[in-house]
Length: 120
Image (cartoon, rainbow, N blue to C red):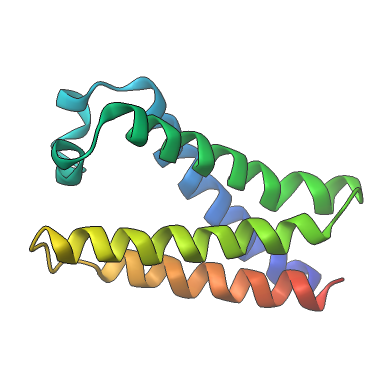
């Protein structure tokens, strides 16, 4: 179970470190080709989402690694489930039906919650 957690959580953390980092450092024009939804959202909100993604990625890795408050890993993964459910709503609200990546991220984060909770 521990190995499974680290594989799934590690991949999820890498995804969110990359995506969150991009949202923090890139301009709207640089983000638009890969994230069309940024046009309908104020940049401070985009930056906040990026910061939450970075913090969540750290929350998946650091607490279990250090043994300090390892329950935070399940909370971080649960936050990613909520984040992606919100992302699906935004995409569908904008008429974008391409939500397969978001659904895959919801499922991956849900598995991570289960693995993190099982390891407690």
